[in-house]
Every structure is written in structure tokens, then in C-alpha cells.
Amino acid sequence: MNHGIRHKNKLVTNESLFIRGPLSRLKELGFAFKVFFNFIRAFRIMHFVGPCVTVFGSARFTQESEYYVYAEKIGAELSKMGFTIMTGGGPGIMEAANKGAYETGGYSVGCNIVLPFEQKPNPFLHKWIDIPYFFLRKVILVKYSYAFVVMPGGIGTLDELFEALTLIQTKIIKNFPVVIFGSEYHKELCEHIHLMAERESISEADMELLFVTDSVDDLIKHIDTYAIKEFGLTKKASKPKWWYGEKLKPNEKE
Image 1 (cartoon, rainbow, N blue to C red):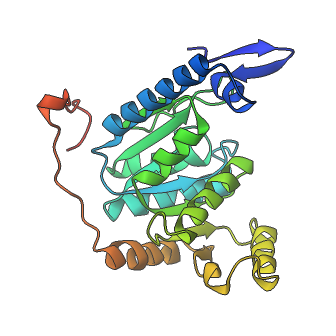
Image 2: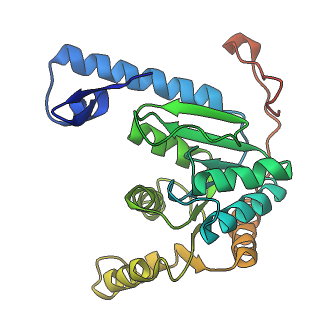
Image 3: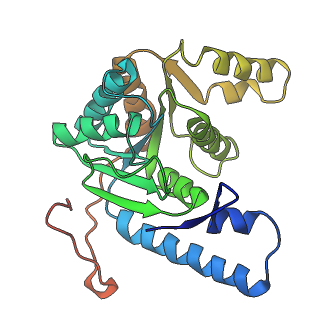
């Protein structure tokens, strides 16, 4: 499905047209309806996925990368704890985390961004949704998750990290654990966050929102302590309601 057009060698999507400036009232109303429709669609599809851990990371790492291997192991270990693994649904780190859960017998879901290049859903997803808007995708990646794992990535990964941190800092969501995996890769990032604390642009308490590690075991223990035990996390036995037109497909778990 083509959600954009080429204009002067640049991609122009509905989203980019909307945020460039004021449009006619009719066009802005139409865009608002499209956003609302996609929110409702996402809520319906993801309502029964259970407590999730969202794994953020680059789409560009291959299976030969050590980060891919780590992400696969993390996905597997988190799924053994009873979490559904949620990612952006694409290749690289996202695929690895989904694969770990999928092949361990856990549950694996993805929020795939609709682009005319680069990304399509990876083959290790029990359920996924194609989302046309970046901001909507970030809402879904946060809404169903009780912990966030930040693997090595690029600008999009940093965007997702600071989105989660901002929501926790401002108490929009609860103080769910945020784990940065890969101390060497994220060395300069962590140094800059420490600098912000030193310059008092963030508080010392904000530093406690992050846990940096190179150990899968330590990551699992941290999430067990600050997600499962802290919030008494259990999977709710919710079922589809026929009057909403909801039903499970054969490959979806209850």
C-alpha cells in the first residue's frame, strides 16, 4: 500500500504534510478522523496481547551482529517470565527480540511503521499491525508495556528512549524499568545524561530512571524486581467480546 508520493525527490506522506503547517479545516478534520480510526484499530488488535516488554533497537543489525544475538536471548528470557515481547516489528534488533520469544514458545507482537522503503514485518510475529503514523506507533509501543529495553540503535531508538523517559519523569505513566543494554555502545549517551544532571537540567532522581548493563541476567533480575514484583504483575484473563465484533484467530493466544 502506498501511503506517500514522490515530490522533488523527497517522500511526502500524509503525516509530513499535516505537520508542515496549517491546512484547510476540511483537510485537517479528515486527517484527525484518519488518526482516530488508526488508534481504534490499534486498540482492537493489541487489546489482548497481555503485559509486554518493549524492545527498542536498530533495524540495521544483521544476524551476525553480537547485538542481534543478545536481543534474541533477551527476548527468549523475558518471554519465559510471562511477558509478551513487543517491538517495532521490523528487521535487525526488532526481529531478534521477536525471534527469541517466538522460538521459545512465548508471544511476539510488532507495531510496524508503514514506509515505502526499508521496513516490513519480520517473520517472527504472532500478531502485528501496520501503523502509518510515527506518533501513533510510539503510543502503542508504550501503552501495553511494563518495561523498556533499549538496545543499540540510531535516531529512532533514541527518540523512543526519551519518549518513555519523559512519560515516566512527568508521571504520565508509572515508573516502569528502563534498561539500556550495551554500556560501551551507549557510553557517550550516558555521559551526556550525567552532564545534564551535573548542569541541573535534570535532577539526580532522574538518573535513577535508567539501568545500564551488559548482562542479560542482570537485565532479567532488574525487570523482575521493578516490574513484576513492584507492580504485582499478572496476566489478566480477558477474552474477546462478541458484541464488539472481536474474536481470536487460531494462532493467537487468549
